[in-house]
Every structure is written in C-alpha cells, then in structure tokens.
Image 1 (cartoon, helix red, strand yellow):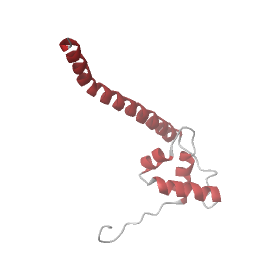
Image 2 (spheres, rainbow, N blue to C red; image 1 turned 90 degrees about the horizontal axis):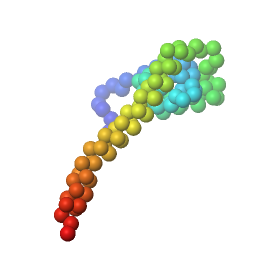
Image 3 (tube, helix red, strand yellow; image 1 turned 90 degrees about the vertical axis):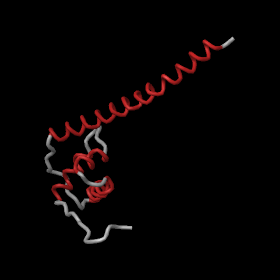
Image 4 (cartoon, one colour; image 1 turned 135 degrees about the vertical axis):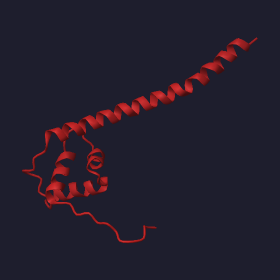
Length: 110
C-alpha cells in the first residue's frame, strides 16, 4: 500500500541518463554501485541502459569525468574489503566459544 498524498515523479535529462549509462559501462563498475552513487534505483538505470542499446538515448559524445569513474572503482574496492572484514569479524567473534568448549573437553576428559 502506497503513501497517501501526491506522488513525486523525478524527470532526468537525457544528458544525465547518458552519463549514468556510460558510467555503468566502465570495466569493473557495477550497475548497482552507479545507481547508488547517483541516488537512483538500479532498475531505472537498467531501463536506461536498454534504451541506450535501442538508440532512444544517445551516449556517444558524452564525457565521463575521470574523477567520478575512479571514485566508483574505489567504492567497489572498499565494499569488497568491508565485506571481507565483516566476515572475518563474525568468524573471530564466534571463535572464543569454540576454543572454550574444546579446552573444557580436553581438561575434563578422563
């Protein structure tokens, strides 16, 4: 069930759409990351990518800011590192219980 009241509909320029499509086409960059950085839904970006393939959005001649592209790549790298560290943290957090159980079994076995 939706929220009551008027619905806000955002309109994006063709230049914005083309830039988003070009950013999402960079190697090593995910559609999800580009959409998140532009504050749009990933499905919207996927729709724009489809429109660009069909020729409805012209992406040729649109300049990509190298700084933005580098920032997206760095964001992806940091997300991977964060996920790895989060997993390590969970493993280490549960480790003392396993160590204490094995120690108790070793010291109390007859």
